[in-house]
Image (cartoon, rainbow, N blue to C red; front, side):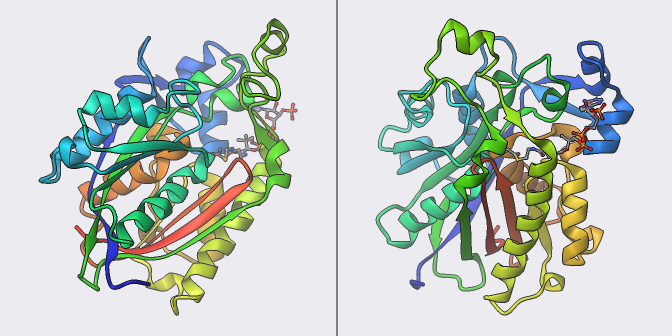
Length: 331
Ligand code: ACO
């Protein structure tokens, strides 16, 4: 690795104002607060207002992030938006956000990594910083999951919410902070277990795709659950092992927030103490690319993260995709 490291120099988040509780959902589908809490740990989720879209959430999260730094939008070199719910197929949400922010010199692109998208984008952004070609890279994990969830399917509509979390990546010469390692994986044979079948070139939108509810998330929840625990555990142990560390060394483990039982099963296998784990799924549900940056933001804001802390971020999602990032917190 080069002498120049990338580090997270600022962080921000944005969630829509509207709260939807489990009781609210129980009025729409055959479910209950008790079932949802017991099986998922979710209590409520945020949902966009009419007309509010990904680029709105992304821009607000970035504005919050920049307000916590000394950096202006005009100084940003690159905007990367991991998401499965862009405003539209093209132009990229990154271009729409660049315009909203007035980030005149930035280029940007969207990245499709589902729930692992934020980690894939962090790894990508860090490379641009570490090569020295870019000084200020923004990664904003944003998803408007309610735009692709079937409101009549109780098995999926209770699981997801909308939100955005943004980080600014900058170079540092300080060896005590920054990204230490990335471990990223994909296995396309898992694609069939969690996907949105229509809307792309394979099944373009038609009356038939709409009638068959193919523009919504379809998943085999039990299979996803099983692989999530297995791979989150493996990828965390592996990145620690190859850096000469063990789970006990971690100040904070920040897993993707898909289901509290997935998080607890993974943490038990890693033998982590409760105070080592970031959990906020109760308030936001699964916001896909946004869960990790939102958890990081809250952990930092409430004083759980301090400069120099050893942290693992870990994700699992559609693809299948999964990965881990080892870093020393830098702010
Ligand atoms: N309310 C009440 N009952 C429900 C609900 C609901 N919201 N949803 C499903 N059920 C019922 C089912 O119909 C089923 O009833 P049946 O036995 O009469 O057929 C029963 O509950 C059990 O269903 P299971 O699917 O076996 O329930 P399980 O305990 O596996 O929990 C869940 C389902 C919560 C979806 C779980 O499998 C899970 O969390 N899987 C992981 C899914 C996930 O996290 N996906 C996203 C991760 S990756 C990413 O973030 C993109």
